[in-house]
Image 1 (cartoon, rainbow, N blue to C red):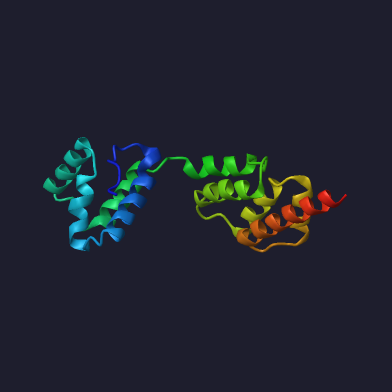
Image 2: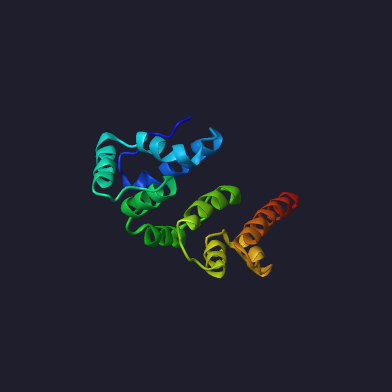
Length: 163
C-alpha cells in the first residue's frame, strides 16, 4: 500500500517517512526511482515547494536527502521534552504488557536518553508490588526490566490466587 499523502503536519512526518520507507522496500523500488515517487506522495503545495527548490539549484540527490529535509523541517519542535514529561507521568493502570507498549512508544521519542534513566523511569511507573520485585532484580536494560515486570506480574497473580 502506498503511503498516505503528506500534507506537512508536524505530527505525521515520522509516520510518512516510515510508511514511505516500507513501501519502497516492499515494492522493491530501485533507489533511482524513489525520489520521484516520494515527490508524488506529497500534497500539491509541497510538490510546488519541491519544484521551487530544484529550480533554485537546491534539489535533492535522492530519497534519503529529501527524507532528512522533511524530518528537519517538520519535526515537532518539543517532541523530546513532551515525550519525557509523558514518560515521567506514565503509570501502569492496566496490564504490564499494555504499559510496556505505551512506555516503549514514548521512549523511542526521547533521543539520547540513557538506558539507566529509562529503566528507572519505567520502574517508577509500575504498581507497588511489581515495582518492588522488578527493582529488586536490578535490571540493566529496559528490555530486561520489562521482562522482569511481566514475570513479577504473573508471579504475584499466582501468589494471590493461592491465598
